[in-house]
Amino acid sequence: MVKISVKVKAGSKQYLVEPAGENQYVLRVKEKALEGRANKAVIELLSEYFDIPKSAISIIAGFKSKNKLIAIKKD
Image: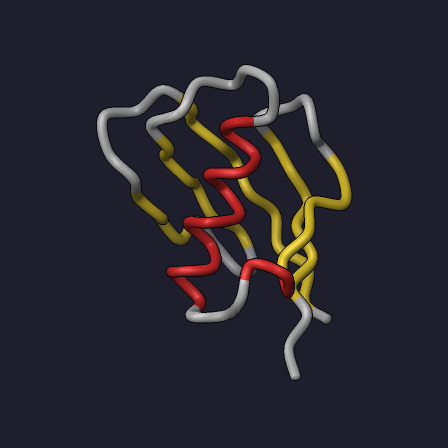
């Protein structure tokens, strides 16, 4: 399992993953941070970026924060 630190910028005009250091990323998602929509978009974006299933990605800290800790299960 790999843990990465993510800073989410919700309500952006585009979807974007920007590496910001070792195991650190800045994610831009179009969804607003309402009712978990941005969290769902974060998982979908990381799934596409790392080319892994969404089920392999989980948010382990920062559900209601823009700074999140994400666990990625790698086989």
